[in-house]
Image (cartoon, rainbow, N blue to C red; front, side, top):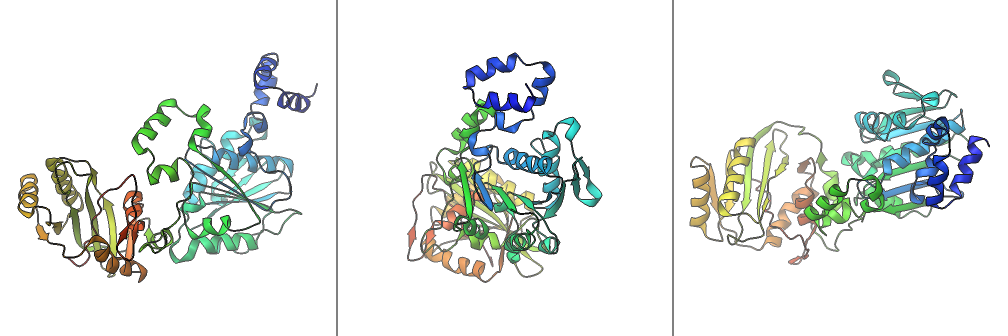
Length: 423
């Protein structure tokens, strides 16, 4: 029986019987079958049947999204030597390290006799039959202009740079170039985040969506990883997004939206700081839920940048004070601004005990948290604030503040100070 026939025969068997039959194959046959993705993939990792144009795999960490995307690309390339494939990552470095050379990347999955050649200088992957894939960065939308492709794999689209609308421009430029072959197709893989591009795809009738959770791939993940990660994050908003693959939608009337925050994100500060301030919101008691600690810098360009969220949960007074002192030292803070509504003398004495030379300023809040948040949110809307990196817990807190005085209740409630702009 030919190997392809054996594959079809095995696919039709129940799991237990399949293992028995696999043991009867020769070593060479078993080696070859390890590269037949359909034999080992879960159904949700296989491309949908029928006439589709865009397939979005939106699932939790460890689901097997990268493997599914890379195997789909490999299948397309090996089946058609005329295939011209776009590989689009958040950056060229990520496209190379994850999509091409990663543990679940294209090179790692290919059998030796059909392994493609990667040409880094040309940003190109070439298969023995002539099929080609080109690497692109979603951070450089113009790089996708003019290219023509029959297929595309876009990885972690929720991580694409949203500043200056780059993510949407890159996607649009890619679609304009999908004009080779009889049925151009795009696969997008991502962990969910409510960024404009993801919401656009979910709202389109021409997109086939596959959803999934981290636990769906339990057989290929260390049991301790799943147990520990669930213990650490529980049913928090972050866990629902990163593990359960749930798209967290903005609250009606929220002062901050996910899209607003994504628009202000930077990978690294674009301007040198002229002043650094640590904002502190101490817990109301020694058993408080959290102490909010945020580091913010004013840049030479006049923009404020959130550099770090050093908040600590359920701390003793000594522990949160040490965290404040450490943040001030690490970031070279010019000022530490702490709310003193809950026992000002205690706040000062605890902080002085941690670092007697701390450049401390105590302030008393006269308004509620939401009222104080409104002018800060206005600065974000005016484009005067940047987030250097990602701060999931802090950003969840912001997006839970609703105009009119409401604060959306969540199981992972924590205290976050408003960034101390201008202090």
